[in-house]
Length: 254
Image 1: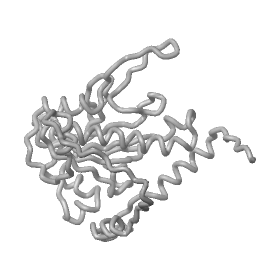
Image 2 (image 1 turned 135 degrees about the horizontal axis):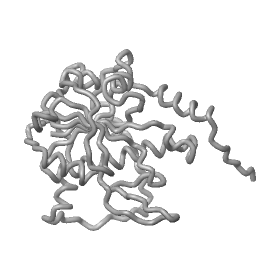
Image 3 (image 1 turned 180 degrees about the vertical axis):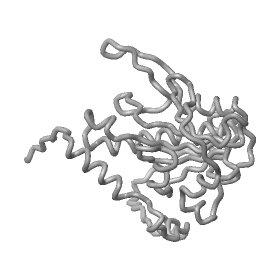
Image 4 (image 1 turned 45 degrees about the horizontal axis):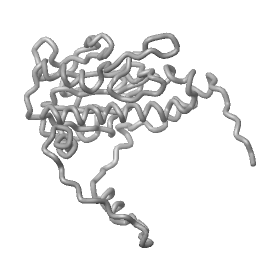
């Protein structure tokens, strides 16, 4: 049996990883008209084999506790009509992203957050556009630091710019103008590459997904409507929000 030898990460391989990400950019020039019909038909045509050995689960009755109500109540909604003050924003950030424990590892203290991360590196950056929350922070992009619990100002912006960053909003199928916060989860792949090589790409996507699920659950718990957005324009997001970092996921909440 052939034994596979794992190659060591090198500078060239990192560029292969970055090129792969660029090759999957969503561009204004390649926007297509997408409808739910394609996805729903795919589900209808999916066949599950039943050889008589399947097992039915017990019926589940949802309890009237906060956790089960939150899980059951999570829905994507573009109705950003729920109020948000700065206390609510602070709680949203804290529950989704903040340090939840500090544990010793190899002679040093490691700050752990409310979501899993490869090697506890927490390499995904959290950019936040805020509006309709408080006058001194409205229409501003910040980079959130969970260790210091601080919003560090990046730039001013507005809803017209935000609506230009995704296909659904650019072509007025949906609208972000009433969203209270828009999260951009982004990364510089160089941060993890020395440790994980090309696996960095997969690990980065997984971490962004964990963070996004936290956002959706916490937003639902706080009575807010979350919208995950994957059809965004990579180049426009880098130019207007994340700078040198590549955006992996966007979430609008309100």
